[in-house]
Length: 252
Ligand code: SF4
Image 1 (cartoon, rainbow, N blue to C red):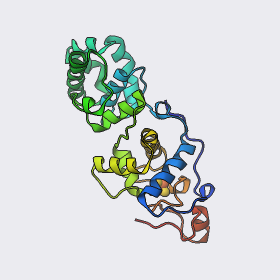
Image 2 (tube, protein in one colour):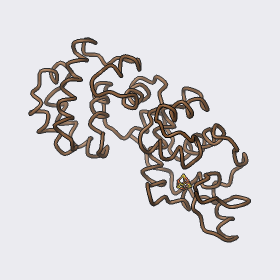
Image 3 (cartoon, rainbow, N blue to C red):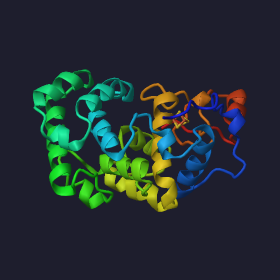
């Protein structure tokens, strides 16, 4: 479960001590360093989905498509009470699953996916979620993003999930120029030690939800504003001082 950010970032508080990085890799490393101070903890602490084992996290991640983690967390206790293992869900009628997961939206497709997923995990992996990306993406409804969530959060295996927040913030911050999630993943991973991959993804997600909100970013409260090439900050001397930059930030 993720902890709350430790107060507003405050661009002025975050005047860079290491200078403005000039390369995407440098910006990635500074982003990771700054966000770790704002959103402390390891990947399992930063994940906002409730789970007790890799199977529950896999199910919760599938359910999280097009909805909020809060909504997923509101249905998973009943779902795992009714179907307590992949074997039980594999025997379920999709109708029974639909009734429980309805609040998460797209419930018919998600119910069919979950039953197929449970059957595959039961039949091919003896009821245990596999811990390699190749095996995970071979499962129904599991793409690279979901696989990387399960790897990095449930298994402690390096993985960097690229969701809509990670994709959006990575481009805003100049960490990558790519739009393809696989290429974004490769760019970010290349700049960091593998042990940092999962936590950076989760921290970018939290920052995207709380500060760098789509279409209304709170740049004045952002601890990355002094080097973010997309920062929208007050103009004039006071604004530049608040941004902690020599030249101010560029609107893009
Ligand atoms: S666009 Fe604004 S809120 Fe988003 S990362 Fe840059 S400075 Fe922060």
